[in-house]
Length: 376
Image 1 (tube, rainbow, N blue to C red):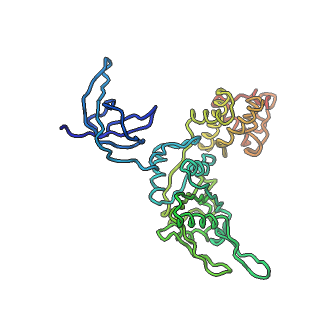
Image 2: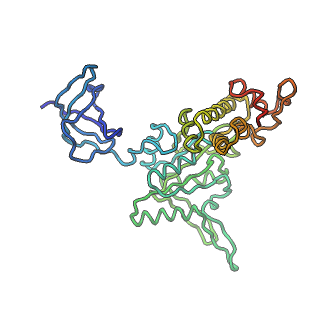
Image 3: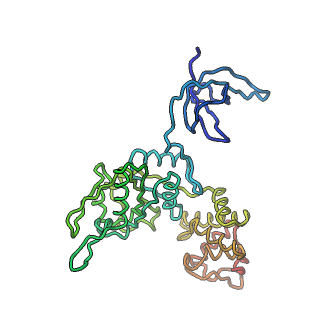
């Protein structure tokens, strides 16, 4: 008998197969008979080569017989994308691998890229409990994460926080053998107060516990193994905060950078969310990308994220002219200082203002012209 080969199942229009063995790369695969067992995406099988053939275009096909299942892909490995959210498949696989092995993860990226949205989308896709989001920059003491001492009926009691309730839900679920997971989001973890930084170390090392003083005595907070932690962190000097993440806390987290959506994906996402025409969606996304590039290059102070695209598209969807919607959403007074008005020569009256610099960036890229201001 010839040596057995290995093939991997992959989802497509039904199940498709790929050779694991390098010697057979380039061959399409047909089974000699339909499988009699369930085939899951990612499963690897030992197969026997029955024969090969080539068609008129010289496309080679191997006919194989399933012999034995070699490897069953784990459920977490089957998640290769998130509905309505863009993430590189390799990045998603690595995140899932870290979660599977009990690692804490910090999501790094520009504002509006969807760091918090990713956590909620991931939990939903996996069938986990809805995440608990904590704005850690508001915390001044570690105790405040879990509750606060409050006077009641002449005595002082410890009032539990929503985070502590969430942790205890996870603890009970684990003890009762309920097959579910919980996810905590420490939003803007790079802005955590310096006094809190060091005391968090115990929560995210091998002990997964921390002691806190309360009016009722010392409490020990333990994170159960079915509870996972994400931190989020904006990038850029505007978001460094007053404190930052200390080296010891960094060492307790893995990190991955979430990147903005590709242009085509962002356009389709905008169409799907608002129902506007593709041409309008493309114009809005092009404006957003031009401003982001200018902000990254230091020509302007900042630029709106995908939220700006949604704002402009929302106006268009209710009948606001496209150019006016774009100016309202991307060049509004909340974003940039200055008045966007022209003199008799067609030049911006306040050329050194931030709003003039932003409009200039759009003009240089050919996505706006002075006459557009008449439509605002």
